[in-house]
Structure formats: C-alpha cells, structure tokens
Amino acid sequence: MNSISVKNLNKEFDKFKLDNISLDLKQGTVLGVIGENGAGKSTLIKLILGLLHKTSGEIFIFDKPLEQNETEIKKYIGYVSELTALPSDYKPYYIDKVFKKIYPEWNSDEYFKYLDKFGIDLKKKFSDLSRGMRAKLSLAIALCHNAKLLILDEPTSGLDPVVRNEVLDILREFMLDETHSILISSHITSDLESIADEIAFIHNGKLLFHQSMLEINENYGFIRCTNEDLKNIPQNAVYATRDDLFGTEALINPQKISTDLDIAPANLDQIMLFLTR
Amino acid sequence: MLSALKSDFYLMKSTIRFFLIVQVLMICFAIVDSSQYLYLFYPTFMSLVLMTSINGNAQLSGFYNILLSSPISRKNIVIGRYLFLLVSSIPIILLSSAVMFILKDATAYEAIRLIIICCTVIITLQSIFTPLTYILKPNYISLVFFSIWFIPAIIVMLLKPFIERSNFDPTNLILTAENIYNSLPALSIILLISLILLAISIIISIAVFKKKEF
Image (tube, rainbow over all chains, first blue to last red; front, top):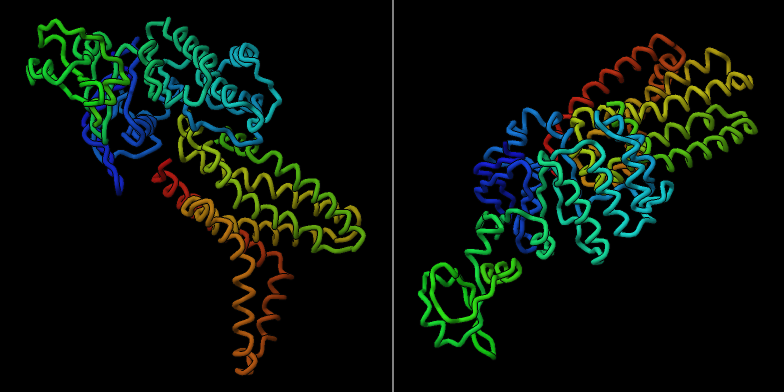
C-alpha cells in the first residue's frame, strides 16, 4: 500500500512550474525530499495537502484520490511546517479545545503528555515560545490524532542540534509502527541521511531522481583527483565535476568504473551541490 | 462548522475580551448620557472590526495552513466564520438592548426596533464585506474597512453643492425613512432581505475560499 502516490503532477505559477512529478511513498517508509530553495519542495507538499490546487496530474493518499476524499484522508495526516504558526495569542491548551472537535481520534491525554515531555507551558502564548518549542508543539499536534502519515516541511530548520536530535528521535519512535510513513523535506541533509529510507531530489520543479538510500550509496561516489586521473574515468561514469586550486572533485557512479582512486560515498549535500550546478 | 467557529473564537479571544470591556464602558456612558445610540453603536462597529481583522489574522499567522491540513472542509471553515461573526456581535446587541430596557432608557417597542435595525446593519455589512476579506489580501482589507466609513461621507460632501443648486427637497425622503423606522413590519422585511443577502454572501465566500491557495 502506498501512503502517497503522485502521478504526473503539474503546477504552474507565473514564474515557476512544478513539472510532471511522479513519486510514491510506500507504507512504513520515510521519504526525504531535497532540493535547493525554490526548487518546488514546499509546492509539492502543499499540493499533497490540498493547500494549493494542481494544474494537472493525480494525487492519491492511502490509495484514495485526494480530491474526492480530502476530509476523510486528512484525519490521518499530521502536518508540520517550518512556517507552521499559530496566531500569537494562541496558547497550547486552546489547541486541545479546538482540535479535539476537529480530529475524531484526537487524544487529549497524549497531547498533554507530549507537552509535559517537551516542557511546554500550557498557558504560554505562542509568540512567547522559542523556535524549538514551537517546532515541538507542532509535532505534538501532528502526533496526537492517530496520524498514519506525517508530512513535514523543513521541521528542523533553524533548530539547534540538541532539539533537532530530539525531533528526529520522536520521528524514529513514530516509525516503530509499520503502518506509519513520513514525507519530510529538509535542507539539513544529514537529518535525512539518518532517518530517510528513500530520497527524492527536486531541482527547478523537476524530479531529478527518486532512489532508496541504498541505491544512492551504490550509485553516487565522490573522488578528489587530478585532471589527468579524471581523463582515465569513463565519461558515462561522471555525473559532474568541479575544479579548484588543489585539483578536481567529481561526483561519479562507482559501479561504472574500476580504478585505484579512493572513492568515498557521496553524501546528499555533495550530490545536491554537483547536480544543481 | 462548530469547530471552525471555536477556532475563530480562540483566534480572536483577546480581541473579544477587549471589546467586551469597552462595551461595558460604553454602556456606562450610555446610562449617564441616556443615549440609545451609545448603547448600540459600539457592537455594530465591533462586528466590523472583527470581520476585517479575523481573516488577516488567520492568513498572516499561517493558521490557515494548520486548519486546512486538518479534516475540516473549506466550506465549513467559511460557514464557521460567518457564525462566529454573528455569534460574537448579535448577543451583545441583545444584551445592550436588555440593559436599555431594564434601565428604562427605552420601551420594549423601541428596544425591539433597535435590535432589528442593528442586526440588519450588522448582517448587511457582513454580507457585503466578508466575501471581500476572502478576495483581498490582508493589507487591503484595512483599506476597505476605512473606505466603509469615509467614502460615503466624501460622496455626501461632494454631492452637497449639486443638491443645493438643484433645489432638491429631501422632506419626502426623510418622511419615508421615518415611516420605515416606525414600522416594525417594514423593518422586519428589511431584516429578512439582509438575511437573504447573507445567504448569497456565504455562497460567494465559499466559492472564493475554495479556489484560494495558501
């Protein structure tokens, strides 16, 4: 079963186009979406949530078409965004009063347990909460209504490493249930490397690749060498190169070459850097 | 729908609290001044302020993103908004009229007449301007709000010289207005028309909000 299935999705703006995106998020997996600013990650997420209207294409959530089943589907989606904000006067205990009427499976006890665990003051105004606390509050909201799918748009952006790690731990705990899935976009690729099973890379509104972490580790390698060494590598094994004062760096496909050169596994940052240049 | 109303209530809770405190002060002034106008002007004004600020508040804070990612339909969000606006202003009108009646600043007939007039004004203004709050960007909504108050005054000022030159006699117009003002059935019919306008306004707002992107 797919938690999300997107087919030939297009969204046109005046100066930007999300172009023919197709991808699946299987139940029980974490899909990380990477790409530079303005690549289309948030647009994709907003389309999946129905915050934006698609130009064409199909979106299925839990194998049901989104448009016809939006309200039913959203009972089981938890959404956290970097920009998720409550009105400045909103207090955490208002959330419980409002959302227990909205979500049929809202669990007040669990919500208050999370707030207690996160050290969030129930009566503190949203505007008085730190960025880390706001992120945790958003997560608590997303986790307290029996969500099967979490959609997270830059959830760890702007957080210090300690809070980021706590957030990732919560997500790992969420994934202990095999029926759960996460779609997460992040600039902090190290976070994705530690939690994602698959990565979708969006560049200029187009999907460059959608591969498992295992495939990425097999298909992408990083070498630092001289220009002479590079000439000995088959051209079809080189994705991109970059020259600097000390030689050449290259993103290569290690499976297509046999060389004595020291090939390091490429991390997501390196892949992003090379493929977007 | 009721959950949307509730979320709007919490969204505007501190504003409502402030308005209620001011309303109590206005009632005190009204008692001292024996002014029916002071009793009821403020709730009408307040409903307009709530209407113009609530949508901007929800949009600028990003709260719509949370609300729209939850299992609540856009239609119910809009209907909840209208309900909130009515529920937060009309009870205050009723309360103020009751105080007016109890303190003998108005007879039962006068109180009922003022309730109908105020409700008609609130419903009509909300019907006209709430769809605009969905159509316009939050920054422009305040502009519209000020236009409500100033544009009619400017038009009257501009027309005044022409009216004076044309020897227009407003007596008949004033008499007709007075007749309507003194007739409960006529006022009730106008209230009914404003309710029809409200229904049309809700349909327009739902259509606009369904197309809106966040």
